[in-house]
Image (spheres, rainbow, N blue to C red):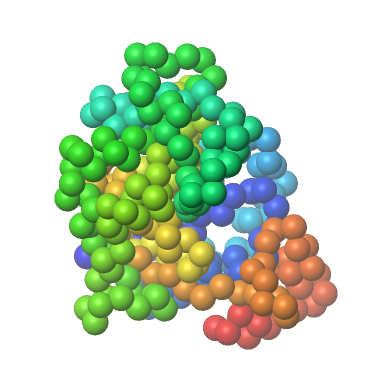
Length: 286
């Protein structure tokens, strides 16, 4: 198996030290394996993605010494591919339309026994009785996890291989799924805010990884729980499951994970102050 990995930032701000660590680690791993490092631009959030931030991504990565094949995959060019994948799930009977607003959901989950999921409060299933034939403009599309488990109970026993800092079984195989986790830790997640709009992150990323023949996904530990969602969608869409490597996060002095709004940690800020690439590598522990 030829090693193929990717770095997939969103152009919604400047890359910071955490991005530098993830990109350099991925790139170094691909070089060590004589493999391929790909860059993907996740730009489906039209309201927040800016051309100047995309240009800065290319500039910062080039300065770090990272290279990749051209052309770069951009999610905004692939909306039809996501719609096709969504249609597969709809035709399998695994989706329903949802007209609930955030306020509706907050009100419905005010009972203290309601839990939270990877993407926020556990959706109470208000619209689960609806079929896609009842879809109306403006409705979101949700995955019906109850229907998935009823039709494909083996989904709750899926496994994936982990080579990063999150340790599973001695062979590196992770067994993190269960029916309870899928129903109460994931729930009926949103696959698309509208059937005719950009997909949710979870659907787009599995479709893109398959399209790019990604064999190894290298990303932060904060996305470890999301991986469990992704292997479910891969199974439902009959897509391959890559090997995953979840790495440590770069944090500030207070232990807080870096965010794009923290411009003081931006790669550009350090570069403008005279830092070298080796300085950046030392800062992130490479």
